[in-house]
Amino acid sequence: MSNEKGPDHSRRKERSRQAIFAATRALVAEEAYKNVTVEAIAARAGVGKQTIYRRWPSKSAVVFAALLALSEDAGGLSVALPDTGDLRADLKLVMRATAKEFADPSFDRPIRALNTEIANDAALAAEYREKLAQPLEEAKKARLRSAQEVGQLSADADLDLVLEVLYAPLFQRWLHRSGPLTDAYADSLVDATLRAFGP
Image 1 (tube, rainbow, N blue to C red):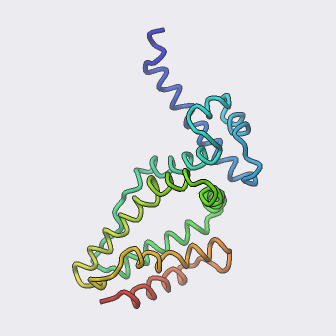
Image 2: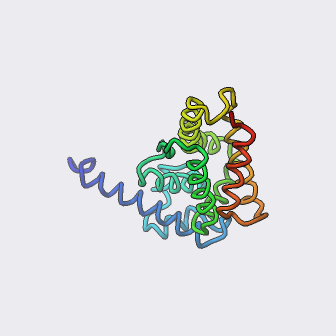
Image 3: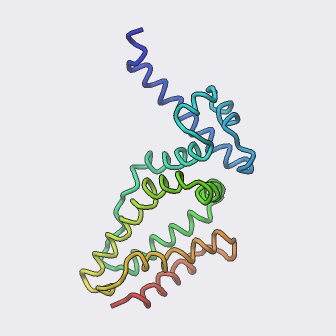
């Protein structure tokens, strides 16, 4: 009894958590999102569904937690953007990587599912904003501020607007499947943004 909350219990709990996350990501990649259920996740993970419901209140919460865990396992989200001293080159590197990520089928399906849930779940949208979107935006703004300090970006540029002009077209093209997400397209967004907000 004394070991119930000891190291073995903690290890079992973590193994269970990782199994749930792996099962969730696999099912979202394999199935239409509407067909993914907490029951199916539990069965794939080899746990009872109450194990899931004790930690997460809904399917959408499990899906978000599983996707967030990928970033956390990779070392967290608040990672500084490259700063070589050349803003144009740094943004092109970041935007090309972003376009490749959006074009990757293993990323596309779960992120589409998550966006559907965020649009219909205010609590999940708030959690997404706090744990994922906001830390990434702060990292991007830090790079833009350093560019302002050395005169590569207009000193009075609204950084929220800069990010919207830079990223929104890419997101819209991905969302509507309206065109290829190529390096050339990523570069064109950087060039257009810097023409609009350059010094």
